[in-house]
Amino acid sequence: METLAFQGVVGLSMAMYLWLISAGLTIIFGVLGVINFAHGSLFMLGAYLAFTFYGLLGWNFWLAILLSLAGTAVVGWVMERFFLRYLYGVDEAYQLLLTFGFVLIMDDAVKMIWGGVFRIPDIPTFLEGHWPVFGRPFPVYNAFIIAAGIVVGIVLWLGFERTWWGRTVRATASDREMANAIGVNVPRVFSGVFMLGAMLAALGGALGTPVRVVSPGLGAAMIIQAFVITVIGGLGNLKGAFVGSLIVGVLSAYGTLLFPVFELALIYLIMAVVLLVRPQGLFAR
Amino acid sequence: MDVGPVASAGRPRILTPGRSAIGGLILALLLLPLVGGQYAQYVAIQVLILSLFALGFNILFGYTGLLSFGQAGFYAVGAYGCAKLLLLKPSLLFGVIGGTLLAGAAALVLGVLCIRHTRIYFSMLTLAFGMMIFSMALKWRDFTGGDDGLVGIPRAPLEIPGLVSVSMASMGRYYYFVLVVSLLAIGIAYRLVHSPLGLTFQGIRDSEGRMAFTGVSVRAYRLIAFVIAGLYAGLAGALLPALENTVTPPVAHWTTSADPVLATLLGGIQAFAGPIVGAFLFFMIKDIIVRFTEYWLIWLGIIVVVLVMGFRGGVVSLATARWRALRPGREAP
Image 1 (tube, each protein chain N blue to C red):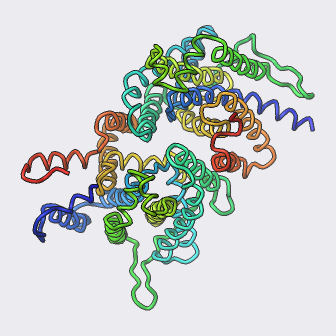
Image 2 (cartoon, rainbow over the protein chains, first blue to last red; image 1 turned 30 degrees about the vertical axis):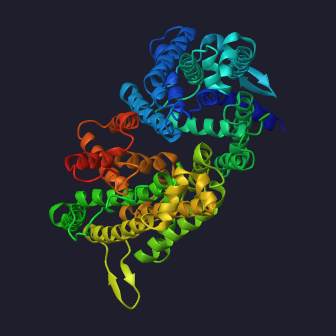
């Protein structure tokens, strides 16, 4: 029984990485209407940048995370401003293909710059150690990840619901032309939202560097899970992405323990069933 | 509606430039083993396999307007199915036909579900089913061999009981087998898309509502397109085991689903020959770039970005536009 409860807590920390990447993916879809195939690659880029600043150069942990967010945001800005912006008028299949082109570019660029797999840097000293949870040592770092994920969730919720900027973005999401007509600078909102999404993915990647191996295949693995989550929660639905992340994170943690053979297939089965029965997602209003 | 490059006005000529080009190409393909070595034949087989894979994909995408990101699933069913059958009974035709039909059956079952959606939701649904097949290939160790895949698959002889039995041991023989099968399949696809069926597909792509008003069951035709794409993916996959002697889970991964997408995009979506030209270009680009750097995917990515930004018609439509511009007497499409 304790094992099961403990595994649930482990799954919870896994769910937070998934939440950060899915939040960005779902926000971008909700506002821009674009499925960003390259979102996993942005996650990976965030991880590599944080790894470089923190692990290789030995800089301050927080500074490293901040720089990785900034760097990924710039890449996101270039993608939106100089490429995606010219494709909003054409078939959405081409937007999908464009972002897939960026997957190929970023995955290989990462290989060129950083090479293969690296050692994992040490956990920052103030986050070291273990707490007893259900009679077992639970790493403080995992607790930190869970807290960080929840804080990001609250900040996003407040930002979208309680600020002028959030209201502008929501207005743009529900009707671009009308927002434009009442004086919203829609192209700037699009750029801002894409950069925000990129930074959320980078944060997920950066926070994982001290405990997860970064490798060039990371992007392809993450994006597919983020797709599953955003579909379960409903494309464009932030609350749904949070719950979806918890479902997939915890399910994978139990799955590897209880039914390793079908764990992987089960997640895709859930995705397919949700698409067929409730394509608007499980948590649509 | 554009019926295709061959439908030209005026008196039919037997030796049109298009036909002589195709004839020359087939002749060149037939003579290839005399000029090229093992490696050239191997690459040519790969090009033909990807051509079939992409051709089927484009019947679904270019002609019917549905972007599938799960074609690797059917490719894998073809490959694993053929491999299993060859291990059971070493007869090439038995394996290839069996693998193709299995993939077609899988496409029929999953297609009924997938065609309930269009656009992005269709793409996501095909992705989910494709990855489900990948998970099975990876985890169902007893049947698929897990990570290691299926190994020691024989390049079985081409047997028709009571008629012939031709050994396929040499690369050259297998090349001719794949070439004949591919030409047949390409011919059938050409007839299909230039038939009323193909026109119906294009009608659904251009205006679903109007097709429904004319009494066409849009869903039924989408399902037919889906099954055709699944059969071609399965045939492409079924030609793989005898070439490589092994089948491993990456054939089912979503990144494999991207190969026909890229080939089609390179060659051109709106042209019948687009996916075939694209498959050729795909391997040429790879072959040329890997001589200079191991990072060829970054260049492929850049090419994809450039194509999507500026040349959405692909190489074939660029070439035909240039061709028409050079011959002003003929009407533009």
